[in-house]
Length: 235
Image (cartoon, rainbow, N blue to C red; front, top):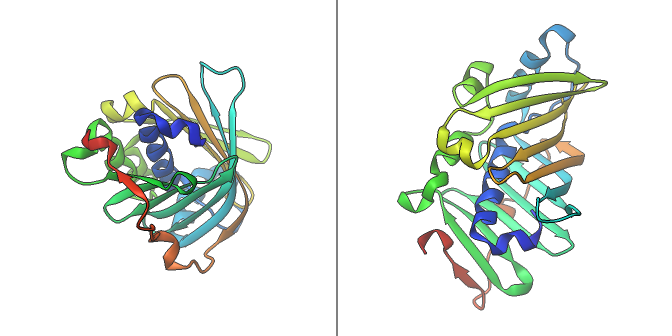
């Protein structure tokens, strides 16, 4: 998400949810799928993914702005639920999913925000985190315990899957989610998130790599002593 959105607590919550959903939807693999069992093939592809990285262009559309906000960067993922999301243009912002927290880092400001994934401090979006942090759905049945599949539309060489969270609290924050993947190789192409305030966030992925080696240090950033660490959910 664009750096300006992190100044508001609500924006930070939306960012965390967006990244967590990306974990739930990022099915990538190689190999063709038949037209009659495209969704089954997509679910089967989940078991082949251990690590994943890609360049990302993130577009955030807000009702208050006439032009969308665009950021560019890179994402790294390691199963079952670790990720690093680093936006470098126009301003560097880093999000890291650690075992019990999400850390949002603003290097230029020497500032970091910590969001706990445990206890009551998770706040009103705890149900959404429970939906999404489980990782990749291994079957349609597993997905349907958390989401309603509203539609599956194939256009050209891409399939757009529209999902709705079943949890009422999650649905208030994020009413609808779209996953876009290629029909020929099942590679993830994009995700699009619709938030409760009417804003949207779309992530377009390119130059993706399946199961590359990833340095463990990426998921455990070391902050200098002069960084200020705050916990917005405790306020």
